[in-house]
Length: 186
Image (cartoon, rainbow, N blue to C red):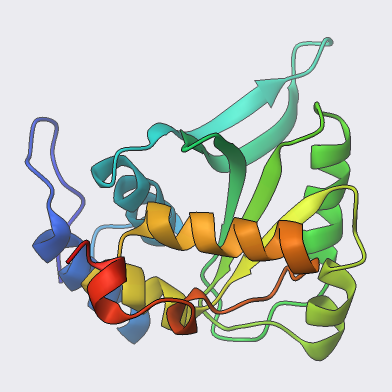
């Protein structure tokens, strides 16, 4: 299992693929719970050309921490707050509602992306599309696997975001939208 990279270490898709395999098997050696998935997703966006911010805290006016985010990205005119949930169980609506409230405190146009290794409950999937005007895109383990092994995560984001705008679908699997050749830039 890959350990967390040291400063200055070159991280490529091969490393991220090994890290993803370790995440799927359980806690990767040397990583705190959930941190490997956070690193994996943000690093994939960075490799694919997005401007990224890794996990960060938003300070409160009283000096404490108001909010914590797993990442923030900007690419192709899309800005998104990232939330990763490395649980084997399906994710219920509570983390989505929390993210919706965080998005509501920001300018319109910001998207939320939730990456869940365990998937989502039917209620979470159903309610995610009704959280408008705050937009939340749901990402599954199968989609994470696809962007780790084969596809561009920024292309996938663009497809998911376009479907959200056009059809109001928060839960849309990008893999069926384009051919393998188109997604891999061929």
